[in-house]
Length: 312
Image (cartoon, rainbow, N blue to C red; front, side, top):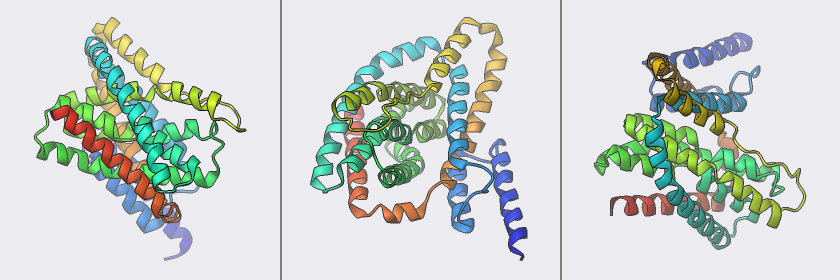
């Protein structure tokens, strides 16, 4: 087969899979597997699009649309509980992460980025903290590779572990929000487990994501040496809140909100396919063993500690 024809076929297949993500045929788990398989077969995604940027906007759009399915009263109650849960979780995870950075002799900035990604919201936290920490491109790439790999694993195994432990949807929602890195995987795992798990996981996760702001300020004022000084705060959190408020104050649009929520679920599936298709096995190999040991150890500690506390 001619190279040009092969490229056209694989590019067309990439777009076809994205379209299939908007049908009931594609689940979150299948979407992630399809993305990984696509990378293994082709090695990259169509050159005319920036998959990472597309993935980011798909994810943000999905989260905003999912806000139309959430009850304001339940969100307020969950957020009250979630504030203290996320405060304790973020503080302990960052402390343990920095300690493990020293134990595994990982470069300090890489260890900081991995700890921030684990404590708050994966790639979004790394993107927010990296300019403040004056991290290099390699340090950012290594951290993202580790976080995305563990994130992908969590998306696949958390619903299975939850079912094996016979966790109810509320408990699973809290666990997923605390122990899974990226918002995409938290929402994805919650949607697989059930509607209540999805609502709780999304709310607690976005409460956790708000800790980007104080952590960025701490690093900016106490640890910054150089860098552009910008603090990147996820704007979609504000739109997510507005969507919840709109649903509460305009109850007559219930059927429209159902359709918007459905669209959010489908966009999320497409975003998860894109996550799988952006995994770079070369970056994972270049990251070395110690940063992986740091990321895995920290993630396991957070996962086991949080589930023990939740079911105790």
